[in-house]
Image (cartoon, rainbow, N blue to C red; front, side, top):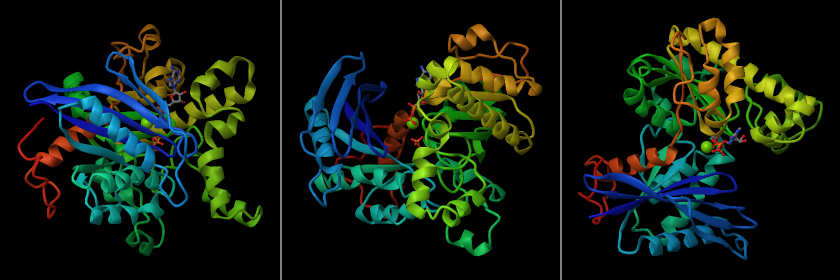
Length: 418
Ligand SMILES: Nc1ncnc2c1ncn2[C@@H]1O[C@H](COP(=O)(O)OP(=O)(O)O)[C@@H](O)[C@H]1O
Ligand SMILES: CC(=O)OP(=O)(O)O
Ligand SMILES: [Mg+2]
């Protein structure tokens, strides 16, 4: 019997979703994909089918009432639409990308009110991302307490980081309080790692750097498919230059902002999360497409692009001694998958490693973009965090150990396996 799974990926002002159908023995296929955007002020709901046809395009007149989570109304609307779109096909469960699982959650987990409370307690570690991740979970728990929900963590894939990569050189008591490096974009890296055995046994077994370049951006060093280093650390601010986030920065700058400029935590947060990165450098846009369009005639846009690839190559270079060499480089996410000029510029800065790009393959966004004599195999692999979430929902809800100590829902057992 066919069942369905809904995967949600909530950001600060939008909730992206993918709806999957799965048949026993026939695998899964995505039947709809869409977004709730403009939260909280102007909720807009749009979904397309697998063929790209628009299935729904609707706005909600009112934002949340005072004291109400901005996710409540739109999430209820999404659930109604999903139910009507599915007809007789039962919704097996909902999976969520949750940015922070702290030191505690090393694997996806079935959500209960107690788990939700434990995830809420992690909010100080990701003050902007965690509330956005948890809003739809809370809304769904209230609306449909019977509907199985699974939290899938961006941090979980990095639980294989060795201790030396997770520590910060601060007084030891900070580590005990959770002030350590975690790493993010784990669902994306886990998906990429899961594709490598089928695409390239050499990279699957070897030393590979994956560059997840979206609005948020990071690198992950994979040794035989396991994360051993990554550029985001304690927070999603560290590492690469991002759309609006600063990436690696001397902490002395924060002290300067406090002392000399009188900024408080909220003021510093606004600069580091929302006004920095490509937007801050260029003064015009956080969007890579915009910057590429302007680069020819705009020196600041050109300088922003140069800083992006300079730091990308620099931080990839810092992973070489950690990995003990390099077999593969994988580009993924919006910029990594679509921007040939950024890939070319980053690879040019890594040519000393023996990286050789095939210009035509790169322009064509081919699966392999390096030449046959390149010592490093360079690939473009589209990421798919939603498919990873779907797999985790199925595994979590059908595994006997799923959510240890948590009552499995009666309608879930024994239905689907991947
Ligand atoms: N065709 C393209 N060429 C260059 N950049 C692109 C292209 N398509 C998307 N991007 C860039 O990808 C970034 C968004 O990446 P994405 O992975 O979709 O982000 P998010 O982190 O929001 O999931 C933006 O900077 C956007 O400009
Ligand atoms: C973890 C993170 O930075 O996520 P995003 O790229 O979606 O902002
Ligand atoms: Mg993304």
